[in-house]
Length: 273
Figure 1 (cartoon, rainbow, N blue to C red):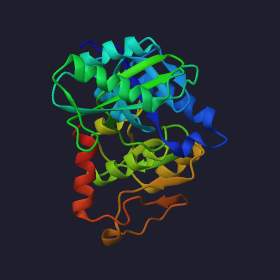
Figure 2: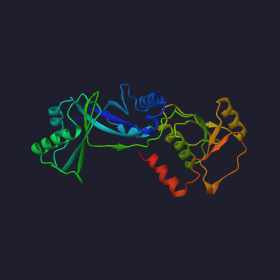
Figure 3: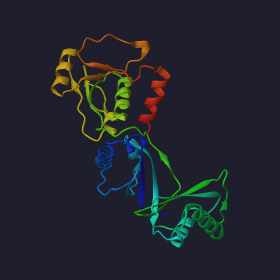
Figure 4: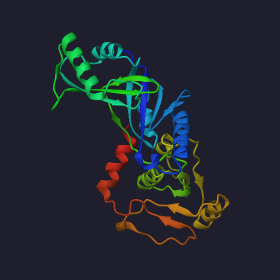
């Protein structure tokens, strides 16, 4: 079955605020930059883009809650039924429909039944509402009818660039994790260090090129931050390894409640995509 599109789902957190348009615009911009995609259709709480093979890159874009590789067909019950049997042919299944385009008159429960009966009649698959092997999902919106079986979870959060700017001190993997967590909150980061450190993982999640700025002391970091109008510095310290920092910058410690196992587990989640 040749897939045609990918459905992106946003976080409800930024869909309800006054800055909704700004958040959506930033997210679409980040998708275009990281995935090199130009053609994106924006819908309410969704974006639709053409299918591409390396879609796991979407997991590196904060603000996306989940996505689904899908196939599009016409908003016609017969067309939907014919497409459904190409996605479900054996095992047990159930059908779930979300109908945001009310010009399509068939109610969702009725379409679920009609598609389910058609699949049972034309394949070896059987209907099971409780514990199906496959859930066939149908989304009907302004762009057409989209059918899919996979919902791939992402990190969610807020799109990078919707928050402020922070300096991120990079001296260890814990510092890298702290920077990633701030990016997940929408922050744009400016990595600094006293010596070279690998920031490849940070770059994979960032829609703009990153540069690791090398400084010899905290005063130089403060001066750099002031030139960028930055007021805060992110450090990967936990409660067990707090240090005193002589700086005018506000110190942010997103790992303050983490232990070593938490840090290792979270770092692996980001790095093993």
